[in-house]
Amino acid sequence: MEYKWRVLSNTTVATLMAALDTNIVLIALPTIGRQLPDTSATSLLWILLGYSLVTAVVLLNFGRLSDMFGRVRLYVLGFAIFTIGSLLCGFSQTGSELVAFRMVQAIGAGFLFSNSAAIITDAFPPNERGRALGINQVSIVVGSVMGLVLGGIITTTIGWQWIFFVNVPIGAFATIRAHYDLRELQKPQREQPIDWVGNVVFAAGLGLVLVAMTFGALGQWTGLEAGAGLVGGGALIAMFILIERRERFPMLDLSLFRNREFTETGLATFLNALGRGAFIFVMVFYLQGPPTYLSALTAGLFLIPVSASLAIMGPLSGIFSDRYGRRWFTVTGLAFSGGAFLWLAAIPSAAPFALLLGPFVLLGAGMGLFASPNRAAMMSAVPPERRGVASGVGTTLMNTGATIGLGLTLAIMSTALPISALESILLGSQTSSGPNEAAQFLAGIHTVFFVSAALTGAALVVILWGRGRGTQRSGGATDRSA
Image (tube, rainbow, N blue to C red; front, side):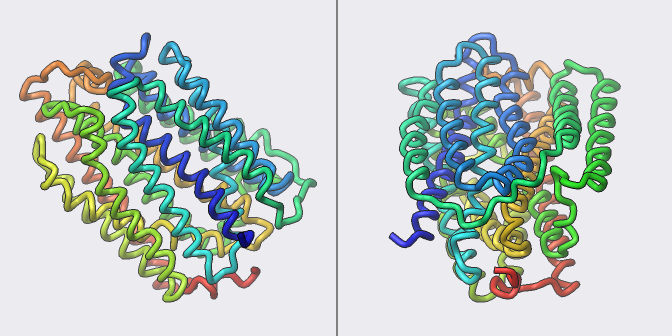
């Protein structure tokens, strides 16, 4: 097999594992909340947020480490750590243990995420990168579908623990295969040290923002305490930017943002992730919460159209954007996504599948149209030796946006529902709620999707503004360094 296809097949397995794990955990959250001892609403949320926080914090460093010590070497290490973390998650006995072991998983995921796009970009010529990244997106779809369906089946039959054990054989096989199949194509740059000060400040700032959002939403902090936490976290993130501007070898290479196309695609990535980051989370609790209380399996089946439409549009957008330019594929994708969120902002309580099918298909198509052309444009905007860092920056923007989006969703829901009712829904209680609580829950969901539509619209404005200023349009034209 030609080397570039070996690269694509192996990195596709990595993306498959990550997508599988994400949706398996999401669909099982209500069951985990009911069955895992000593699990509070806060620890349930941090099963997701802890994973996202660690991934966001380590990605930039792991991109730098990959440029220093070899992308393939650390990619293989990531597979091994992710597999071990999955095994530990399955053996968790309390909610706190599961949160901790999910963070181990996140370290492995950080190595995978920070390297997969860079390894693909190294292996494929400029005129094939959109197609390769588009094909790679199929693994997200397959993982999403498998996660939703397998998560429902496993959770309702043999137990939620097996949603983690399923990663172990896949990860073990892929780790061994990556070790023997992949090779380094870029010379490591070992003279660059790690920016430890930037690391600590960024982790503290983002962590404080998330803690303030979740603790404030669940009433564990007063409004004044949560506000102070948000201000303090924001100040630390601002301090991080100042530190990076003066650091000789910064964790976040701000020089990448001197490239107009990298800046615009990165900002669009962040805003899009901020808008859609909590979609599956919200719909899982909409379908498994009041008043329908569907099973995990049925809820997973309801969500398959999102992944199916993404499966179709993701590869097509990658192939055609290589030929005809990327800009209008990203524009159309964002427009579809924004329209889908507005549609979802009007759904009734206990909507039947037929009523949800239209917005789900539209949203999946929008995600598919946007993802691979935008990512290909971002990666092609930087020289080959900087793609490890650029890949880490791009994925950090996406993960940070999705993580903050989940915190924003909780804040919105906490203003619509009494805290006791919100905790009951998050913990998977199937006790019938009164009509007022069900109506408040639905109103909160509507508000979340209105905000998602606005954020997606902001990403669309960024892309259109960039087109108006004459940024490069075609896949081949953007990469003059390769």
